Length: 173
Image (cartoon, rainbow, N blue to C red):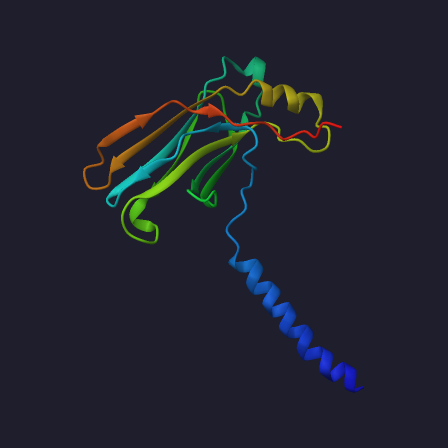
């Protein structure tokens, strides 16, 4: 009986500590950034916001179907930690989505280095149905990134040079 009375507080303490540690972790992206497009790191100063835009410019519904593309707009800090994310379950043909991040809403002062990522497509795992592979292969996402002044709403810079993200790593036997 003594063992139970000693173990109970220890187990409660361990569970509490584990829950706190899990809660303190940075957010995990809904779509891992293994496929999609990424922008170079850029600096955002106080009084500025950064916006990532995605346009689904697939030529027509015949190629993509009614489902559209599932896409995630993400911002990462200089250490590679996810800052914020917006998941669009269905970005239909001809439609666009965007995500804004205000520098003034982030901790610290001065410039902050950020990286914008558009994650979409099939990122591996169990074999998907053929229609899903066809749908993700025909997503034609046109990206852009802009920095604008919070007071005037004027755009200071537009970046369109996104690079394809590397696919999942494959081990070579």
